[in-house]
Structure formats: structure tokens, C-alpha cells
Amino acid sequence: MPASPSTARAINDRLALRHIQEQGPLTAAQLKALTGLSRPSVADLVERLQGAGLVRVVGESGGERRGPNARVYGIAADRAQLAGLDIRTGSVFAVVADLLGRTLAEAAAPVDQRTDPEEAADHARALLERTVEQAGATRLHSVAVGAPGLVDPASGELRDTSGLPAWHRRLVAALPERLGVRVLVENETNLAAVAEQRIGAARGHQDFALLWLGLSVGAAVVIDGRLRRGVSGGAGEVSFLPVPGAPGAPSATGCDGGLHALVNSAAVCDLAARHGIDARPAAHEPPAAACLRAASSAGGAGGAFLDELADRVALGAAALTTVLDPGLVVLSGELGRAGGAELAARVERRLAAICPLRTEVAPSALGGAAVLRGALLTARDAAQHDLFGPER
Image (cartoon, rainbow, N blue to C red; front, side, top):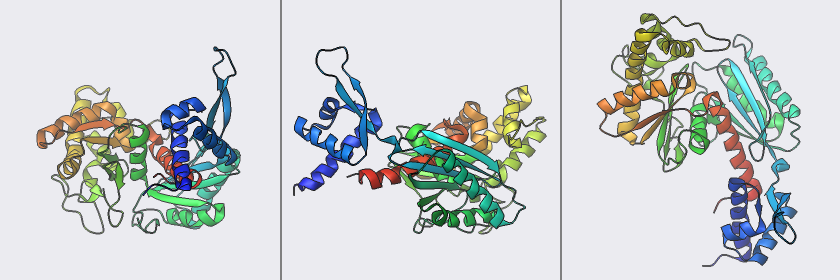
């Protein structure tokens, strides 16, 4: 059944907007070539998009040829603003961007976990509100929040997870009413995977797994280009994975006997000390990340430390690989970033020795910005769905 005229217009408008967004400002002639539409149809389309405030003339082209210059149309980046929030155990990071994802303002602050949860949540919320004000964001559309712990895939609520600060849930619950905008909550590891897939180390990959190595351990799974959360939002909870060398076995209420016990930050610091690695953290640098940085200049001891750490990380990567066959594992989190290409190469070699499925291992390409970039991409998707219409 052929599409109705209104449906056809909506499809063409969305297609044109996607071309303008992905390829930069375009002329009407370029839109005609990319969409296959007739010249009159493109003229009508551009007029509709301008009338809706979604595109505007941002320049001219063709100054070197005879005749009038062609107008160049770009996305109206100020049509809506977006915000991303990365809440860690003891800190919060905020960024505000325009509809094209360009940063307008950003800020970070520590949050003292010893304070009252309500007070800590107010402190984090105030940071975001100041950042929005600093950005001059009068059309804030969506806020995406990345947090450790499980997020219910049905309700979008951050679950009450033991071991995580109570102020996280208080902050997330207060934001919609306080800001009056849509608030999207996602696990931090999942947001890092979104960013790596779209603009980072997994760009061009439809299937990959991201292994988060930091204060805790987690994973994100992307299959057929889609992030997989699981029935309860717990897909990728590899911290509970029983592995050789862990002290005992994990339980339903604690991951101390799982992979977490071998590769979390505290375990990495203990391993470095056993190898005689003397690490002096820089300002605001996690001690375990400092250990990995120091290993590169510690000679044989540093190599032995990295080898043993790679053996441990490879156990978690092997579980993901043998079950999912993703073809690529990205090492992220504070330790994945600090280990860089050197740790990734060691993990890849050890993975090849214990797993029959050929798998590339790569470090994060986005550094500490992965969660915030993923949050902004998620907020932008929501805004564009509302403003541009759904993908068809």
C-alpha cells in the first residue's frame, strides 16, 4: 500500500534532516542528489523545514561560478538543548550541548558520600542547574543520566542497589519535576558503549562487547547494532562471573567471589604492590590507574604486572566472547583507559590462547568522556525523535 502524501512528506523530511546532520550543511541541489527527490519537492521540503524552525540558511556556495550563489542549509542547532549527567560514587559531571551535540558548558564536582543523601543529591542537582544556566539553555529538551547500578528497562528507574550511594536515586527522582524536562536514565557502562559505537573504538561494528574496568567491573553488549539490556536490565553484570583464581564464589547479594575480586581497582592496586610497582597518583587520578601508568616505566616488573592483569581480564573477555562471539571487546573505564593499547594487546593475545573465536581487543577511544558522550547522544536521539519525527 503506497504511503499517504503526509506520510511521504514526513519520511522525506526525516531523510533530508539526517543527511544534513551527518554530512554537514547542504545546498538544495545536494539534497536533491542525496534524496532522489525532484527539484520542486526539495524546494517544498526546505520550506517546510525552515518553517518548522529545524533548518536555516547558514551560508552560500558557488562563489566561483556565474549566477547567484546557492543557499546552504544547516540544522538549527539552537532549536533545542540537551544535557548529560555522569554520576559516580563520589562525584558528578555535567555537560550541556546544542542539538548538534556541540558543548555549550560543562562542570564537575566531588560529592561527599558522608553527607546526608538529600543534601548530596541537592548538591549534584545544583551543579547541573548552574551548568544549564551557564550554557544559556532556554530550550532544554532532554537530560540523560549515566549511573552505576541496574536500570529497570520497563520503567527507566534506577534500582536500589546495595553498595551504591542513596543520593543517586534521590537525584534521579528529583530531576524531572525540578527541570520540567524528560530525564532518561541508563547504566553508565551502556552509555559508554553507545558512545564507542557511534563515535569511538567500535564505530562501524554491529556486534561488540564493552568491558568496564574501574572501581567495579561491568560489561555492555551490542548485537545487530542494538544495545541489549536483558529482562531486568542486568545484561553484562560480569562482576558476578565465577572465574578461576577468585576467592570463593559470588552470591546473589555480593560479587566479592567473582571477576570483580580479581580486576576491580583495589585488586589491581594489590597486584601492583606484589610486583613492586610504586605508583604516585596525580591530582584526581585513581590509584589503580596510576599503577597502570607507572607499569610502563617499571621495566620487567611492570611487564610482569601487566601480564598477570591481562590474564585476569582475559577471563572476563573469554566469557563474553564464547557466549556472544562479538568479534570486538573494548576495554573502558578508568583502568581500561589507563592500560591503553599496551594492556589491550596483552589481553588479546591471552584471549586468543584460551578462546577459539577470533576477537579483537581495543582500548576506549573516548577516554573519560565516554559516559557523558553517550548521555548526550541518548538525549539527542530523544530530542530528534520528537522534533524530526521517528525513523521509518
